Length: 237
Image (tube, rainbow, N blue to C red; front, top):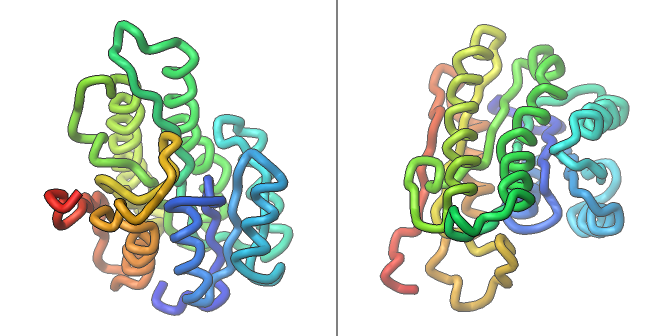
């Protein structure tokens, strides 16, 4: 996919943070970008900020709802006639000791972080077969490293890493490339954090955007299927 001009990418959870940073990078590379979120006003405001209506499409979708994701893909195909890349980026985190973790918080993480990624792929896989496209999930180092108060989040991200790697084996016969990106600390709004100057040591959203761009432009004979990325100097925090 060396020529990205007018290729179409769908980014879930694209209104801020990593999704927004990736969208900016891909638009700058000439791609057409659809972003989704659960709030119409937020998605439309972000789309306007990113570019004009020829470049950007705002889609309202809750990734934990398969019907929503099917509708999102239908709108993208109706507008641009193709879908080349899907970035399953939408995610939530709720942290508490396992004996205090609520059923609703557990369900929110599994439904969004894991089931949501499956639904995004389920809805888009036939379009990706036609384009011999790329499916990328945004996991976490928490997908291989467990920690106290992270039982639900670890479960969702361990599951996402395993899901993505198995999907990679299933889909490569169709010419679809599949990768998971597993960042450490990123300067985002995750878990109610407000990015600020003290986050300078962290990975920045545009860094993940550059990584996605590198994956899309890599020689098609090579597939980095699982990428761990972390801050170079966490001691500076």
